[in-house]
Amino acid sequence: MALSTAFRRAATASVVTIALTLTPVLTAIAEAVTLNGAGATFPALLYERYISEFKKKNPGATVNYQAIGSGGGIRQTIAGVVDFGGSDAAMTDDDMKKVDRGVILVPTAGGSVVPIFNLPGVSNLKLGREVLPDIFSGRITRWNDPRIAKDNPGVNLPNSDIKTVVRADGSGTTFVFVNHLSAVNPYFRGRVGVGTAPKWTTNPLKGRGNAGVASTVQKTSGSIGYVEQSYAEKNKLNVAQVQTKRGEWLSPSLAETNKAIASLKLPDNFRVFDGDPDAGYPITGLTWMMIYRRYDNPEKAAAVKKWVEWVLTEGQELNDDLNFARIAPSDVQRILQVVRNEVKP
Image: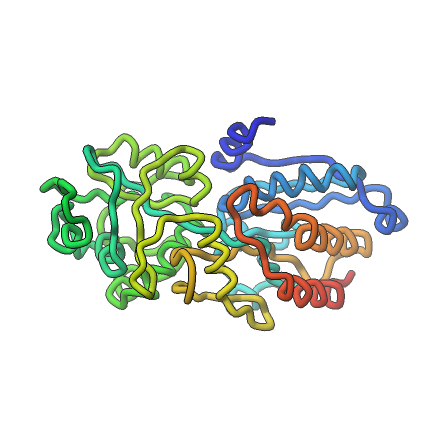
């Protein structure tokens, strides 16, 4: 399958179903085990690659991942209708209390969210640390606002309305984006807030998935939205530079995403809400698989352990190819120890 084809499938929240073979350890337990997962679209392309490569070494079970959005992944995990969920927004304490079988949050990768824009005649744009949240909270409404102009000397900014474009669906991509804007701007935090479906105050245009937001931005002059970095890169979208804590102007890159993820301190529950990393590209976050502490049979528990262990070891070698940051080796060992000890039938 061509990479571009795979990306389109991921962006349209397709179901990935690939036959996998269990290792000899799991084969001794059962001939076939099916693992069903659903959730975040943000890592869907990466998870498709994980499954594809896992297939080559483990042809006997079936792993399904349906990219339905982080909100859906959390809901289905709470409902117990999947074997693992996916979310770019870490489950809250209240969410976790609703999971009868207990839940472990397993970070699998890091990624960045980038602002994309459609401004005729403008190909390079800088949006400052306070400017970006003020645009998405409605405090800056015109493209030639003095604060935007100050950061873009020599750029012919039009005297026209700014049209914001956001996700129509509950989205981990949205969570990563608003988590950063809230971290750097108290007004944004108070007016819009943090979540997979925040209360936008700008009466924005909306699109479903990365593809929907990008399409709306591309056909709407004077618009600005946000998408996952790999999506913007593969589709050659206009991406604005953003500002770090140190005042540096950065374009997104894998190197800067890795710096940001490496600066995060993972606590014992592996859940982190830091929206303003000390280093690297600032609009960056983790994505998690949500697995249960208890499964209904030994075969399912063993299969989940095997799947997670592969993702956090051999699977991490695939992250770079798709512009996702890796989980630090020291954190991988901590996570695997918890999974091995606490996932039980």
